[in-house]
Image 1 (cartoon, rainbow, N blue to C red):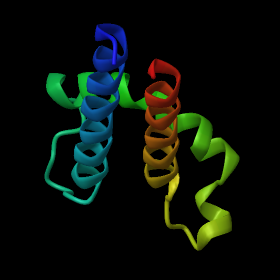
Image 2: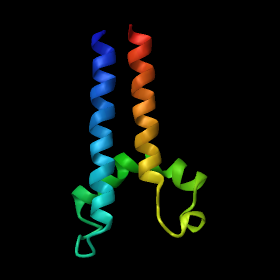
Image 3: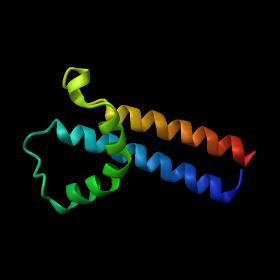
Length: 87
């Protein structure tokens, strides 16, 4: 596999972990939502998660936000496509 493909896969893995961390932080009420690291985390993850949030609003899933899970599945599928194209 090429170096570019490996770099893309690494970025996807990092982004998946950032989405997981962001989702976990939403469950902790004592977290300061305006802390610079939390704001940075949201700026990185929001562009990926937000389209899925609009596609499947929480009101349609019993007010459970499944958009992070959908974004992660999408990223893994994207990674599989990158691997396939890099062969």
